[in-house]
Image (cartoon, helix red, strand yellow):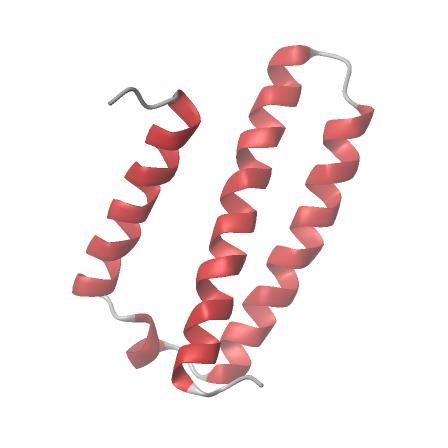
Length: 90
């Protein structure tokens, strides 16, 4: 099956995240407040990446910013899921 470059990057990021959880479990090192602070920081980064991507004219820089934006959104989703899974949110 053909995978786009973006799909491959997301899959490799997911594999890396799984490996990190195996070696360094998030729930053992961070409390809910730390994760909420991290989510707030990521959300701010997402907003800034969006503005920067919109304002940038250079296609290479735009692509790099868009990749960073995708990674930040994915990380925000993963951490939100962790909070919900642990019952620390909502």
